[in-house]
Length: 145
Image (spheres, rainbow, N blue to C red):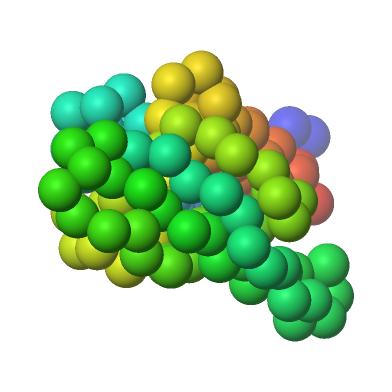
């Protein structure tokens, strides 16, 4: 005797919910990555922020591999004196690099190739996250059978 599945409102709703949750996670992941990466990518490309040169003056360990680094930022226009602000954590004390002060004025980000590569890696998290969510969806669906 062949097994036939009786389609009910409950099974249809369950299948739709099974697709809705991963879809919502994908939209949330994409929006988060884009909202985080685009403003910093604009700074790295020189479309936003104030250009200058940063010299790392300190990096304090926060624990668990995290660092709080500060840099002396010298403006390109030379009419303003240097300021000390936060910078990216993947630098070493004494390192000098081309940078831009963010529009908010709270930290400096690397510009040029270094800054663009940093943001490309962040944007690269998007397809990886999509792949993980898709894999988990397949695994959960197969475990229900």
